Length: 169
Ligand code: S3P
Image (cartoon, rainbow, N blue to C red; front, side, top):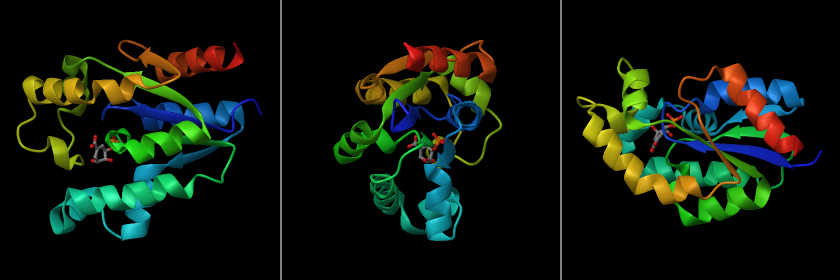
């Protein structure tokens, strides 16, 4: 096992979960979805956690879940889009694995998330401006990765193949 874990980062709608599942299958690693761990720990959906307890509470559970993978190996981890905002999370994630950042331009993200209602940070009338501003603000944190892959116009299969090539290099 060349890399202890593979960590997928990236904005909402960049394909972390679908790519993560197939990548895990190809590598014979276990797929781990940080958002799903948070929902399981809280006993509520992400929308409900934000609505009842606020974003800060969500970020505390998220940080706990990031810490919980510290001693594990053989995982492909899909992080939530905001997990890299916290410097301690970034340090932890860097320490446990190879970081793959998935990207897509704002216009593509808007297209992919147009009908989505499960992202509390993109609820009220999603706009290109809103997504663009968030992307810009987060760019330095997403850029802190071992490789970056623009997923626009690529199938999940293609993106996984690209990651596999990078891992083999
Ligand atoms: C968030 C992204 C979401 C989820 C939460 C907050 C963010 O995960 O963790 O809604 O701050 O970008 P996905 O990137 O899997 O949608």
